[in-house]
Image 1 (cartoon, rainbow, N blue to C red):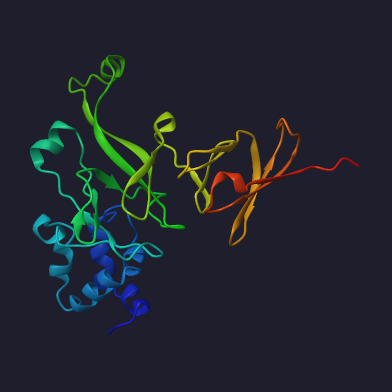
Image 2 (image 1 turned 30 degrees about the vertical axis):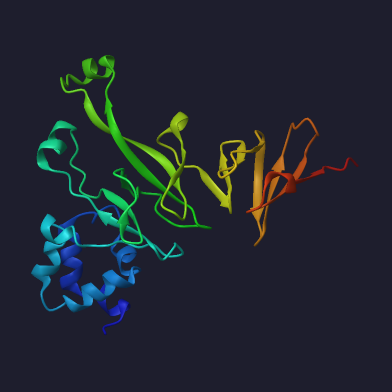
Length: 247
């Protein structure tokens, strides 16, 4: 089989990439990291027109399967093609919606996108943009002179290794969380356990992680300044606080 480096440098494939645009929200290199897609690209190398159809013909595209490095082997992401009437009604031209499958079965009817900064597994969690039906406020419609209030609203969510949404970032919909490791996530100064929903601190400054622990530097705690040591995957009673020693 042709190697990935050679495939990346092939003008015919690169030209197809340029014509196909953003290719469902990922880069050309991202797609080659998926062994299934790489094998498919290689087998289609002698038929560039067929390869191009994967990005332009919904009947071909619906058979594609996306996987991501470091994720559960039984979780897959498959493209979902909006019908033209629905897409027009909800004013979207996006072609890179996906749905989550576990063991070959659809987990839910929810629509997702990887997003520009999301879509990578870490410690059995992945952040995705989930879309839902919504309506613009009247004042927005008035400013835009658009009479159709319907649109698809994207919200950053956290998905676990079972393909389930376990956290919705509804109070800051368009911003991702910061995954510190294991079950531990950060949102501005707040550090919390996405599984137990326990909030460790609202005043996090800096952090670093080891294989098993996340260390959080905090200021203005009731205990004073110092560092939390939090185990990545066990329950909340395992946290320890080391106060800053005055000199």
